[in-house]
Length: 208
Length: 255
Image (cartoon, rainbow over all chains, first blue to last red; front, side, top):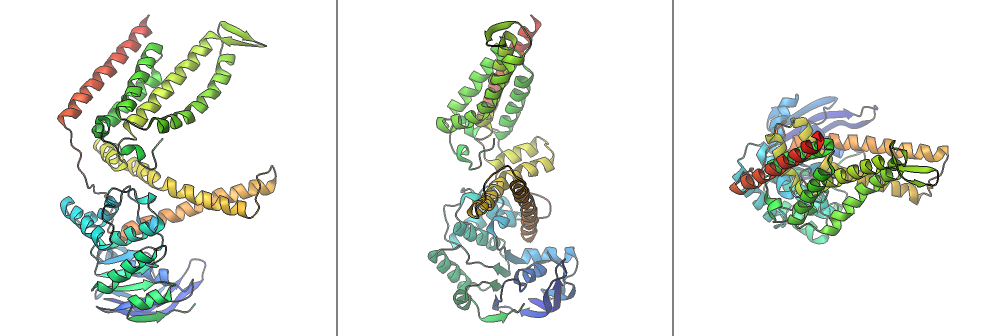
């Protein structure tokens, strides 16, 4: 589904983070990315989503080479990316609107969007949060709603950047449960090695 | 002043249920008339009207007063300076200063004006959710860019405020004291500079997150606006009142 070949990336200041990096995600793969800070994990996700362009290498997603901005429109519709900071992802006044934002962009009708909102809240165990004000939620609640906002787009692949950060024990269990029961493939970055072991079936180690 | 927590937006009074388009048009008309109006009788009636709206919306009066205090704090400044410096017949003499009648009238008008407009905004705008106001603005052909600017300012003022507090707290934790010296000014400049940089970076990330969720330059709404019979009745009533205060204003103006 995702095939990265010989990817190298350099920051504007010349610092190199990825050097000839290869990664393949196949259906059913649940891959954990482990590595120190600054080893380019988030950069990698941004390259997959087309937010950053690698200096060299090939990005092949859903069997197509992706190079230009237009190529990534389809990728963004089929791949869900959970940002590290929930406040970046949740920008609508209410939870309901945040969850509906993606589905409406995909051309779903209002009724369908509302149905998806309800289903998603059910999945993440946050029923009754529809009308809550997004920015007033606690860090953990925001994390869960941000995850919901990604799920609401019904993506085929998930890219999860520190999904467990700020979650309490109960929410962590819920998240682990959701991830273990989904048939979607995903890449997950986390510094919590115990949790990453629980939700993945492959590990990639990244060096600085 | 936008209610960051949307605290006032929750309620079921008729003011809350009023179509946001009617609310925006009303507050716009009122603000224009009050801003140019000179008649004290007209200003008093408008103040009574907006006070009535606040009461009808059944808002928590303590919170409303708190907001009024902020506005009136600035007006206090006007009361200190204007009556003493405004040219005109002296009303009384306080030491070397002569308080002019015209100055007192002028300050009174400003007080009435600002409070009436403020109460109107609290009663009408903060009783609607931000998304319904956005929809109403778009329906009224307010330029899209202004609507989105309004929307994002609303959403991120809070985040930037928190960021400011975090940075400032960490300065205090490291022994920073506000003094009159170069080091202090420099630190404040860094703080503001950092805030700008962070806000810019955040805006980039928010936009990226929107792109990742299929955003292509167009916002879709979840709820539709509906103009009910009751809205029509209330709007007619409001228009009658607005015509009345215009007549009041013009009448006094002509004499």
